[in-house]
Amino acid sequence: MPGARFHADGFQTLIASLTAPDSALSVTVHATVAHRIWLYEITMGNVGTPADLVSVYYIGQVTAPGTATAVTPTNTADNADQAARSVAGSNHTVEPTYVATIEGTGLRTPADGDLLRVPLNHRGTYRWVAPPGGEFVAPATTTDGFAGAADHASAVTDYMIGMHWVE
Image 1 (tube, rainbow, N blue to C red):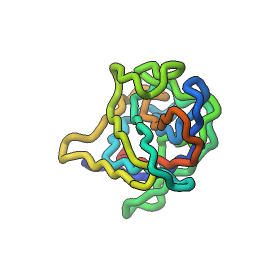
Image 2: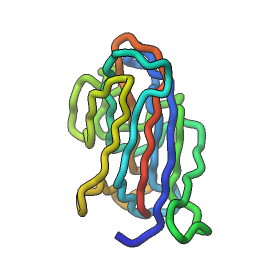
Image 3: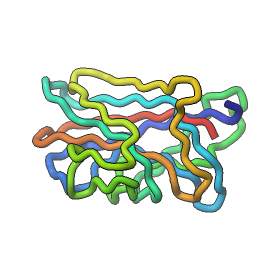
């Protein structure tokens, strides 16, 4: 798969409200430069005080990035002089527009558009790596891409989602 490779991490505080924004990271196609994104690796885990609790981590398709703190993607390939065309955002204050509408229903409700759903103990870390040819692919449509969030009924802690992609 040719192209430049990038990585970004996003952080968020897991809150007990099912309606408040809680997405940690979004990676979307630039609003004026249409291109494809191949998502090939995802890491997720709790970075707050560990406890024996389980949260559900969710990776979904999005059609708009929401409002977040901008993150500068790191170029992980040999062509380190190339900047990412994708837009990364962390610590969302307005949720991305998920293909599967999760806002208000919580991540415990599976819906169309779910790409990955992982129940994970707060003391653990999870790494998903696409099998060859099994990458998640965003269409070359402006502002489309991927985002990740976590859900727990009562825990309040910090968590992280990291994504690696090719564009």
